[in-house]
Length: 328
Image (cartoon, rainbow, N blue to C red; front, side, top):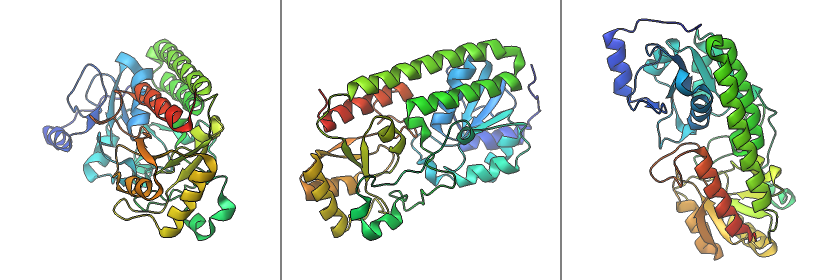
């Protein structure tokens, strides 16, 4: 097996353990440092990448995530200790454009296998308030900012590809091929696991297609402009409350605009997330007479998530969308 074996000092192990790195490995709940596990060690940037590595790698991989469960991925700042951990890994799996500190750390690391999910499928640009751009005026200047004020106008396009099962499957196929090349001794298993995962994603895509086929409106409102790919895949229109901090209320102009959109397009619900404050969404809902519900961008799994893994949470998202869009 072409897997580097490096000795890690007791000091390094202690430092890594102190950080409490999250791991998705089913057979282990500890935080073993990458590079000393006797398996193909993969450092993933955040949950959607770690989930792919775990499903494709199976028993042959040890996966550590740089982003803790419950931590907002956009907020991640790589520490010096995490940078050192990257140097001990056999592979890094990340999504360039989502977490700048991760991009920089992986770019500077000596890891032989660097897998950028953004290169495994075509990225697209998505406006935050698609379909109503002509009415937005100055609001469009903030079209790609999330509720933390982070710029989502990522170079190369919208990075939220995992929320489209079809694009996520394309990424899975690319990750599978990269694992096969980096660890050829287990290539057959990686190939088999990839095929199974892709089949599951195709089934999820079909559930969304049939589940959203008969609906009364195409428009849904979110606090985070993360669902552009999902909206495009299934013929929907995402209206995001952009450029607003979760501790501030929506501008009067934006509330007025969304009131008109809600009335014109039969919007019933303002969606918020599990990893960020729901204050903005609830304020807007209160001002517009709408309901609130969770639409999870699946950036991390916590005790508050509506499911224990990607598939369960995505199916919960489908249920929430069906209700909000009046699907029958």
